[in-house]
Length: 135
Image (cartoon, rainbow, N blue to C red):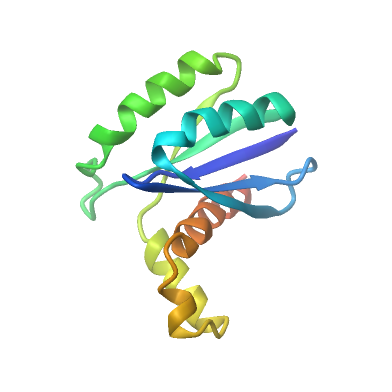
């Protein structure tokens, strides 16, 4: 079964998924936030998903970020739509910074790094990879 990770944003969300053996994380297309619940529900009906990870924005002192007020309603709707799939929050501090650093290291041109959604894709992959490595 696969594991799905979400980097939730107010306008668009990065989504990543493992292979069935849960070895590697791969980015899926960026999804508009307003379409995310439908996307995840349809994905989970087409592919077996063991659990869903959602990036948990935290401040440097460990307290919740203000972004959680946007994420909570999505989490409630997600749990209602997919009650059999566990949803787990994962600390996402520094994932955007890491994504931009990785793009520079990989040699992405500035124009490519500016493409909307690319950092969201990479952040979702980082959230999922970090979770896989912590197991």
